[in-house]
Image (cartoon, rainbow, N blue to C red; front, side):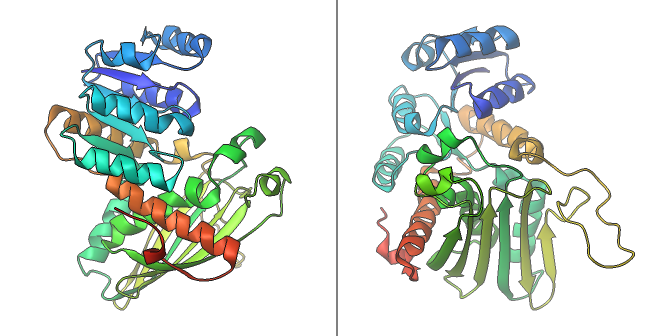
Length: 334
């Protein structure tokens, strides 16, 4: 397949290398708003360079991968759909709720498949947990705990355009919560704090956050995030039920150590970034996109799925600002 890629920053360059390592990708065409950076990556990886997205989309690509900066996602996604090219878009598809709704309507009215990049859906641990929860293996699931704890904060310049910790970071937890449980969130109560660099507060953001979510079957979910988890990159989910409990991320890479005497678990090295933690999931995700582009399967994560996770993040941000519970019916949808 001939795949086009827009954006060769941190995640874009990572995707470029991942795509070139997959058997089905025979040609990779890249473009970037910074021609110098784009050409450097193209030359280093042996990819073809294109001056802009329009030229890329008209060059006979079989699929289009969007990994540019967030403000460019919506425009690029519209270009991909208009060109009739199956499109993969990193989250979020847009920076605002209103534009996300517009894009969900556009995607729903088009025959062009769009796959949104929530890679945890392709992680083996999360898929096994979804099987256990929805298959009744754990009995009646009454509570879930989810954590996304970054080892170190992003650059200061990134924070003002990130959308805030709930939209940028916990949105992955909100999406995978829907995927694992098959349920929808009906209300949230969220808070946050700053104990690190002042640039988070200066941007109206927080470096540590927590939320209590109630699902439509009365399951309670506790979600936390931080930019300062010095022990390592820690992404986990626990499901607790009447017949058992199961956890994702409970292995030798766990960014924890026990306070109990004689316990030396975990034995392995800790992850330092989401790219390291989810490399197999990213490969599986892009392989799935190739199947979508060939017409071999339906989109496994639609723009509407992205919208519903974004709505939960919007509700959490509103709850944090106003110090009150927020029901999802307060947040606009399709």
